[in-house]
Length: 397
Image (cartoon, rainbow, N blue to C red; front, side, top):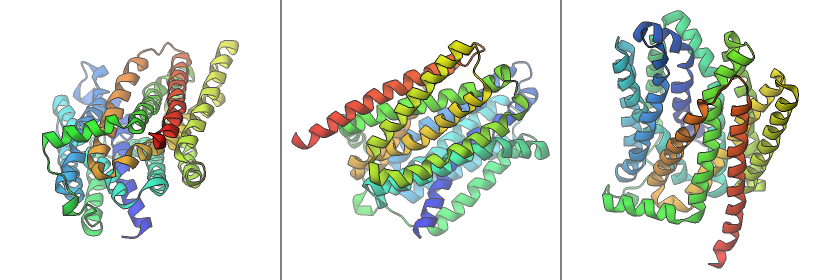
């Protein structure tokens, strides 16, 4: 498999997650009317159930791939995802759809997590960061298309058609993976699936200061992204009265901000991962503070200013999350599967825990959203600065 094809396949693995989440957004009102009309506020559980399953699956996918090989775990995860999608498509029970979404998330975690380990098997250092950045660019592009694609599918086939689209998407991925990607983890490099070895590997990860700090910053950066995703639709609807065109604005901004990954791929080798992350967070702090001050002075921020701020939030994600993954994975090549699992699971679960209560603070203004992003970015910036000092001491220790 050539480099371009490899990047495309890894990007498709990543895209499964974004497609599975964002394509469902337009369908929530219809699902509520059909499956839970007595309690329509339960419909968003369709989203959180998938994230919960993904978090659970993330803990196990990496260790299993270290023991059994990358291909088998990726193929089994994709198969589980397809089966769960079929159950959700056929079900007329809200509870069954929720259960299927949890299983779907568990299945999606396999290809998503193990793809990071596959990249680490084949690349290292800044070259690895470049590959991850390009893959993350595709991941960033998907939210630009997914809501509109989900909306168009729903218009023609109803909300069940979206689950059918998930099946088609994953079948293509499985066939591509099965036919073209060889096993990247040699049998002699595999680690038996033993609790003692797993605990030892986790302890080794969290004992490494750079890995530990990278996970903290990644958690904060993902919290920023999750907070925006949770609160952005109410902002568009209740503040700017753009609920009917939300998916177009959301998609367009996501597409424009996706150039961050292109920029990152070009700059990361020249500037280094840590410096680029720190710079991106510094800009986020300045922009968020500017919007907060403008809101305080004007009483309401113009939509154009808010849209530019939102675009930079997505832009900043493209400059930080992939690099933070690469920084954390770099010293952990010998336990890449376990490292990918722990990094992904811990950062995702903690970020969701941080973002969930923030999402409840919406008060009809943008202040809770922008203020939360400012605080999270400031904390991440402080940790990155500290990481620089730790990194400078490591060679002398």
